[in-house]
Amino acid sequence: MKKILQYLFEHKTLSREAAKEVLLNISKGIYSDAEIASFTTVFLMRSITIPELNGFRDALIELCVPVNLNGHDVLDIVGTGGDGKNTFNISTLSCFIAAGAGQKVAKHGNYGATSVSGSSNVMETLGYHFSNDNKKLLKEVEEAGICFMHAPLFHPALKVVGGIRKNLGVRTFFNMLGPLVNPAQPGIQMIGVYNLEMARIYSYLLQQSKARFMIIHSLEGYDEISLTGDTKVITNDGEKILSAIYLGKRMVSPQDIYGGNSIDEAAKIFLRIIKGEGSWAQNAVVMSNAAMALYATGAYKNYEECYAHSVESLESGSAYKAFQKLINLQS
View (tube, rainbow, N blue to C red):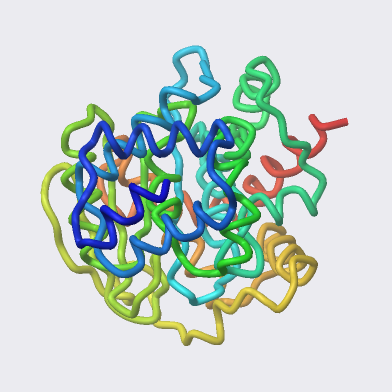
């Protein structure tokens, strides 16, 4: 690792093959925590290159525990994290709203590294038992409409670096990798990113895949539709900017989407919203994210139809029923 660090400190970049080798070695436990921390901070001081990101992704996919969902065309809604905004678990809630609307979902998540509560934190707190058993995950998708995959159980390298990421408390290139290495390889992805540069990188990578995708970036700096301002949307077909009024019928303030000061508080916020007891602003945010994800599937005429399905899913209790079914399958 010393040679690699010296090479990078000379403002050089890694080839795709070299980047892959580093991540493979990280997963094998070859490097110390200090060496891994030093390596990750390099990419805080400069932008990651396409070959480097591809190499890291190659390594994770090679080592990944695969998931076969028997041909179900699944969706994932995921943010890279790292925006420093500490919002409530918008993407995870949106996944349940999408599931309640009839869309099969394979949610890929992790513990929070830069926020109080990541998707894995809240799911674990609310009674979900992590597993990489394919039969269990398939049963969840077929009976609850949604399964949850805790990333470290599928990616050895992510398990190794989990504590290091938490101790650093800042975004690293691992934030960028998560949405690219969903073990179920969903055919539809809505990915939230924390800046426009990352949006361009994702767009380049995802254009090379066969999946339908939608990249979301709130121009206020959020990695999801925040409704605090306009949102940049990039798809297979191009890009556009949409207003908060168009997406959520209203604007909200940053305080409206704050995620709390602890995991328990975040879980309580999650439960209130999924039960349909959230504030008008909270509901608008999760419904707009779910609606855009449904729109990304290509199965609906327009966004308005998708938004109506999202409203129905949340207000009728269908989203909460999907959540309850998933939790009940754990017993």
